[in-house]
Image 1 (cartoon, rainbow, N blue to C red):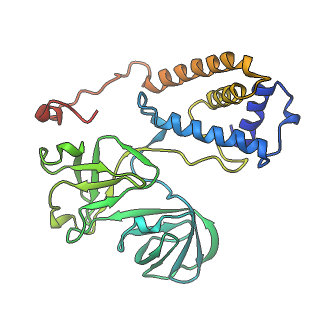
Image 2 (tube, one colour; image 1 turned 90 degrees about the vertical axis):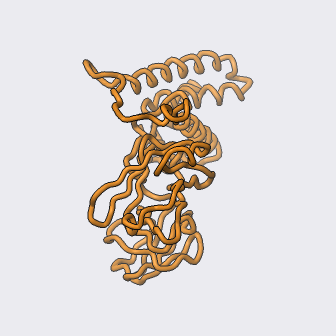
Image 3 (cartoon, helix red, strand yellow; image 1 turned 135 degrees about the vertical axis):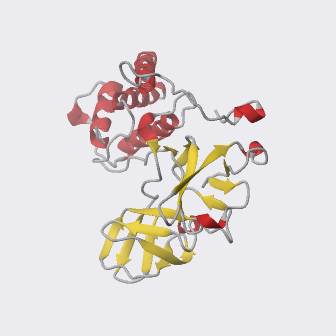
Length: 294
């Protein structure tokens, strides 16, 4: 389901009107629906009772914002947060090969060591965090990151991999060679102890759960496991705030809750004849402190 289809379906549920009566995308009425939908998407993504499999990534995906290249070493951003990065980090722009960040002027201007070959705008891009053992113990995470899964990884320059457990901040002095997540907008990850020099130049990745991008365009795909839940929960909020339709609120909310329960159950179901939990033969953090990360 894309954003236009979501808007159509929400208005059918809310107003009981045919799709041709749906307000035009980007109109004031449509924007109210999209704003509610985006808020509900974030509530769904960060629901503490569920770790949605669809939001799990082994490493950060596209960064927030878009960039423009102009055949030079300068990269100009729109809605970007370049000051979250470090000189030496790697950046890959769609249509280009990986570049190394040379200077960072502001959230929207940086330079790289080798000029870009293309001139283009509204490009997506990714960033690789490079470990600097001489200067940095703390690294800013992708702004869509909200929860780690298990281990952070450093891929060394020789392609070997070192894993570090991620612990609670208050456990940082208890567990040897660990990292902890802290801060907000963006969240940060910090090595609890001095980093071995053998990791210098390696790429730091943090497998975990990343919140979906907001829906902005009619063609944007609805990023929840069951888009019909988003339709009903959005329609219920519209009805609750409309005296002419408030009687429909309990029915719409009830249908949304039923779909949420089914969505949650499906997320927990790993498939026929598959275990719902994995036997962990590694010592857990809880063995040392009396409680685990989760």
